[in-house]
Length: 217
Image 1: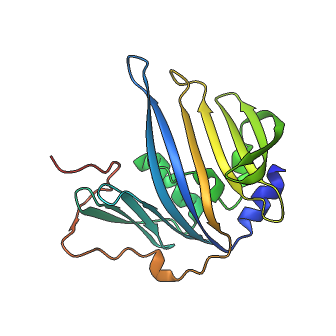
Image 2: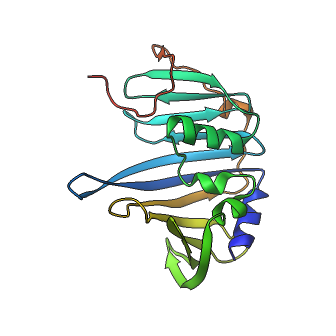
Protein backbone atom coordinates (compact mmCIF):
# COMPACT_ATOMS: atom_id res chain seq x y z
CA UNK A 1 0.00 0.00 0.00
CA UNK A 2 2.88 2.37 0.79
CA UNK A 3 4.64 1.47 -2.45
CA UNK A 4 1.47 2.13 -4.44
CA UNK A 5 1.20 5.61 -2.88
CA UNK A 6 4.87 6.51 -3.36
CA UNK A 7 4.90 5.29 -6.98
CA UNK A 8 1.82 7.35 -7.73
CA UNK A 9 3.37 10.41 -6.10
CA UNK A 10 6.78 10.12 -7.76
CA UNK A 11 5.18 9.76 -11.19
CA UNK A 12 3.26 13.04 -10.92
CA UNK A 13 5.07 15.50 -13.15
CA UNK A 14 3.67 18.52 -11.32
CA UNK A 15 1.45 18.92 -8.28
CA UNK A 16 0.33 21.43 -5.70
CA UNK A 17 -0.92 20.80 -2.18
CA UNK A 18 -1.76 22.72 0.97
CA UNK A 19 0.01 21.49 4.09
CA UNK A 20 -0.93 22.19 7.71
CA UNK A 21 1.99 21.08 9.87
CA UNK A 22 2.52 21.02 13.62
CA UNK A 23 6.09 20.88 14.94
CA UNK A 24 6.22 19.84 18.59
CA UNK A 25 9.13 21.00 20.77
CA UNK A 26 9.89 20.02 24.35
CA UNK A 27 11.15 22.69 26.76
CA UNK A 28 13.79 22.13 29.44
CA UNK A 29 10.93 21.84 31.94
CA UNK A 30 9.39 19.04 29.86
CA UNK A 31 6.50 21.10 28.53
CA UNK A 32 5.41 20.23 25.01
CA UNK A 33 4.82 23.25 22.77
CA UNK A 34 3.15 22.87 19.38
CA UNK A 35 4.06 25.27 16.57
CA UNK A 36 1.55 25.24 13.67
CA UNK A 37 2.32 26.33 10.12
CA UNK A 38 0.23 26.41 6.96
CA UNK A 39 1.98 26.26 3.59
CA UNK A 40 1.33 25.77 -0.09
CA UNK A 41 3.82 23.47 -1.80
CA UNK A 42 4.26 23.32 -5.58
CA UNK A 43 6.50 20.70 -7.20
CA UNK A 44 7.55 20.22 -10.82
CA UNK A 45 9.75 17.23 -11.43
CA UNK A 46 12.59 16.67 -11.73
CA UNK A 47 14.05 19.70 -9.95
CA UNK A 48 11.75 22.56 -9.02
CA UNK A 49 9.86 23.32 -5.83
CA UNK A 50 8.28 26.30 -4.10
CA UNK A 51 7.05 26.26 -0.49
CA UNK A 52 5.27 29.35 0.78
CA UNK A 53 3.99 29.75 4.32
CA UNK A 54 0.54 31.34 4.42
CA UNK A 55 1.22 33.70 7.35
CA UNK A 56 0.85 37.13 5.71
CA UNK A 57 3.21 38.85 8.15
CA UNK A 58 5.79 36.32 9.29
CA UNK A 59 5.83 33.62 6.63
CA UNK A 60 8.98 32.08 5.21
CA UNK A 61 9.05 31.21 1.50
CA UNK A 62 11.46 28.88 -0.27
CA UNK A 63 12.06 28.76 -4.03
CA UNK A 64 14.23 26.33 -6.01
CA UNK A 65 14.47 26.41 -9.80
CA UNK A 66 17.07 23.71 -10.44
CA UNK A 67 20.01 26.13 -10.34
CA UNK A 68 19.58 28.40 -7.33
CA UNK A 69 17.51 28.60 -4.18
CA UNK A 70 16.07 31.59 -2.38
CA UNK A 71 14.57 32.12 1.08
CA UNK A 72 12.36 35.11 1.75
CA UNK A 73 11.25 36.17 5.23
CA UNK A 74 8.22 38.46 5.21
CA UNK A 75 8.60 39.27 8.92
CA UNK A 76 11.73 41.40 8.44
CA UNK A 77 11.52 41.69 4.63
CA UNK A 78 14.88 40.06 3.95
CA UNK A 79 15.92 37.39 1.49
CA UNK A 80 18.98 35.41 0.52
CA UNK A 81 19.96 33.57 -2.65
CA UNK A 82 22.50 30.76 -3.03
CA UNK A 83 23.60 28.26 -5.65
CA UNK A 84 21.84 24.93 -5.36
CA UNK A 85 22.49 21.35 -6.50
CA UNK A 86 20.93 20.24 -9.80
CA UNK A 87 18.51 17.76 -8.19
CA UNK A 88 15.63 18.17 -5.78
CA UNK A 89 16.91 15.28 -3.62
CA UNK A 90 20.30 16.93 -3.08
CA UNK A 91 18.69 20.30 -2.41
CA UNK A 92 16.40 18.86 0.29
CA UNK A 93 19.45 17.25 1.90
CA UNK A 94 21.39 20.53 1.73
CA UNK A 95 18.75 22.75 3.34
CA UNK A 96 18.18 20.14 6.07
CA UNK A 97 21.87 19.74 6.89
CA UNK A 98 23.18 23.29 6.49
CA UNK A 99 20.15 25.39 7.40
CA UNK A 100 17.92 23.16 9.51
CA UNK A 101 14.96 23.89 7.24
CA UNK A 102 12.24 21.35 6.53
CA UNK A 103 9.61 21.55 3.83
CA UNK A 104 6.46 20.02 5.32
CA UNK A 105 6.57 16.29 4.62
CA UNK A 106 9.81 16.66 2.65
CA UNK A 107 10.40 12.89 2.71
CA UNK A 108 7.48 12.57 0.31
CA UNK A 109 9.06 14.97 -2.20
CA UNK A 110 12.12 12.86 -3.00
CA UNK A 111 12.43 11.17 -6.38
CA UNK A 112 12.20 7.78 -4.63
CA UNK A 113 10.12 8.44 -1.52
CA UNK A 114 9.59 4.74 -0.76
CA UNK A 115 13.32 4.18 -0.26
CA UNK A 116 13.63 7.24 1.98
CA UNK A 117 10.63 6.35 4.12
CA UNK A 118 11.69 2.71 4.58
CA UNK A 119 15.35 3.47 5.29
CA UNK A 120 15.26 2.60 9.01
CA UNK A 121 11.94 0.76 9.28
CA UNK A 122 11.96 -2.47 11.30
CA UNK A 123 8.26 -3.34 11.12
CA UNK A 124 4.92 -2.01 9.94
CA UNK A 125 1.21 -2.71 10.05
CA UNK A 126 -2.14 -1.75 8.63
CA UNK A 127 -3.96 -0.09 11.53
CA UNK A 128 -7.27 0.08 9.69
CA UNK A 129 -9.52 1.96 7.29
CA UNK A 130 -10.49 5.37 8.64
CA UNK A 131 -12.41 8.46 7.52
CA UNK A 132 -10.18 11.52 7.35
CA UNK A 133 -11.25 14.87 5.89
CA UNK A 134 -14.31 13.25 4.36
CA UNK A 135 -12.26 10.58 2.56
CA UNK A 136 -11.70 6.93 3.41
CA UNK A 137 -8.06 6.20 4.07
CA UNK A 138 -5.75 3.31 4.83
CA UNK A 139 -3.92 4.04 8.09
CA UNK A 140 -0.42 2.53 8.17
CA UNK A 141 2.04 2.58 11.08
CA UNK A 142 5.78 1.84 10.95
CA UNK A 143 8.35 1.33 13.67
CA UNK A 144 12.10 2.06 13.61
CA UNK A 145 15.01 2.37 16.00
CA UNK A 146 14.93 6.17 16.23
CA UNK A 147 11.53 7.18 14.84
CA UNK A 148 8.07 5.72 14.49
CA UNK A 149 5.75 7.13 11.86
CA UNK A 150 2.21 6.85 10.57
CA UNK A 151 0.61 7.73 7.28
CA UNK A 152 -2.98 7.92 6.09
CA UNK A 153 -3.42 7.20 2.36
CA UNK A 154 -6.57 8.00 0.41
CA UNK A 155 -8.37 4.98 -1.01
CA UNK A 156 -9.33 4.89 -4.69
CA UNK A 157 -7.71 5.86 -7.97
CA UNK A 158 -5.60 8.65 -6.45
CA UNK A 159 -3.74 7.11 -3.46
CA UNK A 160 -2.47 10.41 -2.09
CA UNK A 161 -1.09 10.94 1.43
CA UNK A 162 -3.53 12.90 3.60
CA UNK A 163 -1.74 12.80 6.95
CA UNK A 164 1.83 12.04 8.02
CA UNK A 165 3.03 11.82 11.64
CA UNK A 166 6.60 11.26 12.88
CA UNK A 167 7.50 10.49 16.51
CA UNK A 168 11.16 11.03 17.51
CA UNK A 169 11.72 8.26 20.06
CA UNK A 170 15.30 9.14 21.03
CA UNK A 171 14.59 12.81 21.84
CA UNK A 172 13.47 14.04 25.25
CA UNK A 173 9.69 13.84 25.57
CA UNK A 174 9.41 12.05 22.20
CA UNK A 175 8.12 15.08 20.26
CA UNK A 176 5.94 14.62 17.20
CA UNK A 177 5.82 16.28 13.83
CA UNK A 178 2.56 16.03 11.91
CA UNK A 179 1.37 17.34 8.58
CA UNK A 180 -2.11 17.23 7.07
CA UNK A 181 -2.37 17.52 3.29
CA UNK A 182 -5.44 19.01 1.61
CA UNK A 183 -6.52 20.64 -1.66
CA UNK A 184 -4.40 18.29 -3.73
CA UNK A 185 -3.89 19.26 -7.37
CA UNK A 186 -2.23 16.14 -8.83
CA UNK A 187 -2.05 17.62 -12.34
CA UNK A 188 -1.32 21.24 -11.46
CA UNK A 189 -0.49 23.67 -14.23
CA UNK A 190 2.85 25.31 -13.45
CA UNK A 191 5.39 27.50 -15.20
CA UNK A 192 9.00 28.43 -14.49
CA UNK A 193 8.12 31.78 -12.92
CA UNK A 194 6.59 29.99 -9.91
CA UNK A 195 10.01 28.66 -8.85
CA UNK A 196 12.20 31.74 -9.42
CA UNK A 197 12.09 34.31 -6.62
CA UNK A 198 11.47 37.92 -7.66
CA UNK A 199 12.18 40.25 -4.72
CA UNK A 200 9.27 42.57 -3.88
CA UNK A 201 10.00 46.29 -3.78
CA UNK A 202 11.72 47.45 -0.62
CA UNK A 203 13.10 44.11 0.58
CA UNK A 204 16.75 43.70 1.59
CA UNK A 205 19.14 40.99 0.44
CA UNK A 206 21.28 39.44 3.19
CA UNK A 207 24.44 37.38 2.91
CA UNK A 208 23.33 34.24 4.73
CA UNK A 209 20.20 32.13 4.48
CA UNK A 210 17.72 32.84 7.30
CA UNK A 211 16.89 29.73 9.32
CA UNK A 212 14.03 31.37 11.20
CA UNK A 213 11.64 34.15 10.30
CA UNK A 214 10.84 36.67 13.01
CA UNK A 215 10.06 40.40 13.08
CA UNK A 216 13.01 42.70 13.59
CA UNK A 217 13.46 43.81 17.24
